[in-house]
View 1 (tube, one colour):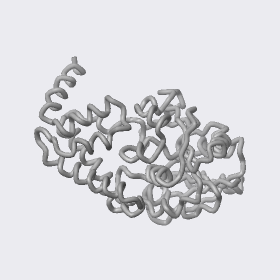
View 2 (cartoon, one colour):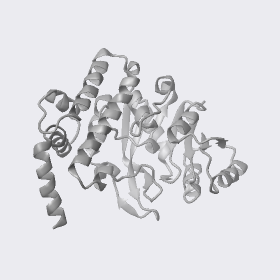
View 3 (cartoon, helix red, strand yellow):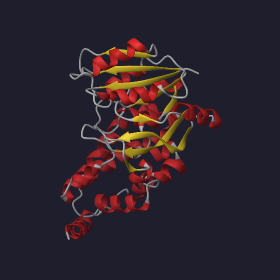
Length: 324
């Protein structure tokens, strides 16, 4: 069974060879590695040319204008010819049997998408955390629910862990282009979970490298914010962006119930921008949207979003304890 592995590169010279080698040395060998370089200005293109010269499975596309990561991955997705495809970052390391294990799980469960856990490592590949799922607090969602409903509010499936059946490509494409939060991997997982079956491998199959150049890493943006109102604005703006993209692509969901909920959710988060003290409107919708999140996340978001007049002093107290 042929697989197309999709890697979007941009100024990745520092870790690129390690990642490509970890793919080419997989126990499963029947694949093409499709790489699209997005106008790199370092030695990335020279490195890619080296691999093209020594391994005919490596196929490189050199872009003549900067596409950005989402459009670059979309370009690669349009080149897929095999029955399956996978995403790859340019700076991680794959476990040797990642492809083989993913294929076995897909056949065993008759799934359309398989995803795995990750091991979080530093630049030198030293372990920061053995489980990305546990670090981010969504282990229960990833292992217990793994369905469209649990993905609808927040993504927990990392692109570089996925194996996907290409038959869903017509529903996945085109990718949403105007969001900072709905990226190629989330959209792919969401759409496949809506119409097909997804399943998981609990073991980490990727060393997920954290370094200064990461576009998206294991840290939360909210961890860097010190003021309550900034955090609340971020929480609301992320969800407005989220459901605005869903609204712009609403026909892809097909069923009326999802379309109705999407419209209600977009209106709910838009209205929260005006709330200064307490909001009691659409509370049932909040709990429906957040039902798959862990209790701490539910309570934190409920207070920040719907009861800012109470959440703000609690935030200040916690901030004081942290300083102490």
